[in-house]
Image 1 (cartoon, one colour):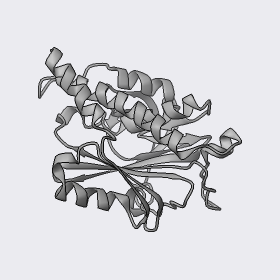
Image 2: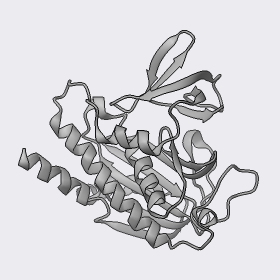
Image 3: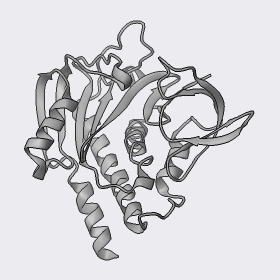
Length: 261
């Protein structure tokens, strides 16, 4: 058991061991995958940062404005996770950002799966792409960059009423991300390949830092293109699935996006 725990924390410590910074690139996630292929031995936990992204994209190819003043990152993780824990992996990024905001005394909450927002205005978002044996995670946080007009976005600096150091935000996020990734890997180390995921600390913290539960929501795989399902959110299950309830009954979803109604 001690060996398993030691390995888990070693993997978590590798997050940010290799950090590379750029002034401007089209898209960090594409670059992160290219580097994972060309330099796989040091790719797990590698972080790429850029001051500005010229061709950033959000979920489903949506435009993401990534101007100077925000924190724009891409991380690469070797994908050797258990099938039953896949729904937990995306949660760790929202949890890390929520803890970062809490450290700053800012009233931000997680909207499932991992958006950080303040009263419906987006502070940060996460995009995860699966490429062969790699999971590439794009993470964008509005810090000092002015939010684009007409877009429901907010910045940490406006909430705080002052300029905030990007380095401070970066180190806070990585600190909490290592913690939650270690919890995630420790949970996996305790499971057999086909064992159901038990109640765990990731889910307990999601309930603590999220405002999703108990809401009436519109859910769809792609809210831009699909007719949404209107439901109430009843719980977050141990494997990260969101339990929705309609007049026809309750059922879990482990992908897609929601908006509050």
